[in-house]
Length: 221
Ligand code: AP5
Image (cartoon, rainbow, N blue to C red; front, side, top):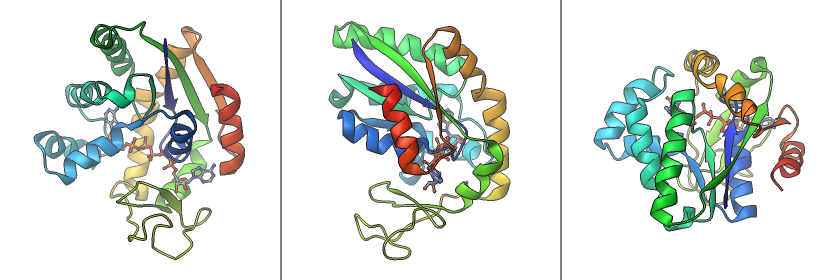
């Protein structure tokens, strides 16, 4: 049975920062709906054009779009033996849809299906706006930086690719607050959803990046 990790937590709780590293450690793909949607926006696909209207307001993109994008992504060969989902599911409706997707994938791969572990990144909300407005990322490799606590070696440029770092358009204080509202209303109920199924692990993510990494390893290995 393949292992599937679902990273849950409010915007800025450090999911993306830790997922890339864990993906390397486990040799699993890091599947992040936010990045897949941003890629669609960049390429001006019909999905991207529609998704942008919601993302600019800090709202969830309609489930039909996200579901199609995720299903297509999970059918790729690199996801055959397990994966890390970052930012999906983001509502109980999406969690139920993921179960349907997992049933379809079981047939598609002709395997025993998925063992799901949801990992909750627990950080007090009041700490997060500062993290978000100071986030910068590499448009080439996706590496995540922070102007306060994870600075690139050369100011403004990616350590790995050397290209200029960018700021996400939704990383301003106003949109961040809307994203927190959406998180509280739509995503937080997933803690009960996975808790009731006995497959929720909580980590203290209000620590420095290395300590959070060690906390994460304790629950995924
Ligand atoms: P998405 O891209 O998924 O954003 P998010 O969930 O809001 O999460 P973030 O990427 O903002 O935060 P993160 O937890 O990954 O933090 P990070 O590691 O970068 O979604 C964007 C939008 O797309 C949504 O609003 C929605 O519209 C749409 N969308 C996406 N998925 C969808 C879905 N399934 N359905 C419908 N719509 C969907 O860290 C943040 C900063 O903090 C960085 O600067 C980092 O360096 C720093 N940092 C990280 N860890 C620490 C630490 N331990 N201490 C101090 N600083 C830290």
